[in-house]
Image (cartoon, rainbow, N blue to C red):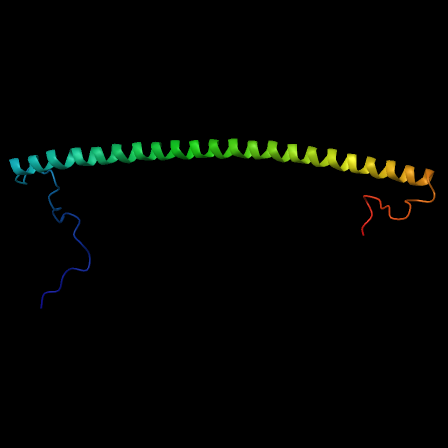
Length: 121
């Protein structure tokens, strides 16, 4: 029986398979036509994906700007409402203080059948 050698001989090389564009390969007009068909599709697909990406980014930026504008508007409304609340609170405190001052001047308080607008019945 012949066994293969345990070590590879340095001078002996295995020929590599021919590459896609080696001279040995038959390259026909059909191959060229297929390449002509496939190449523009690949380029258009790549360009389309880039434009879609930039369009999506622009849409995202526009949405972000719109949300920031609406957030600023809501912030202004909240500040206005807080100001109104403070004004109403201050006027209520003032009314209570003036009523307490009037009650201190009239120790009898409201007469029979009279009730203060601040008292609960």
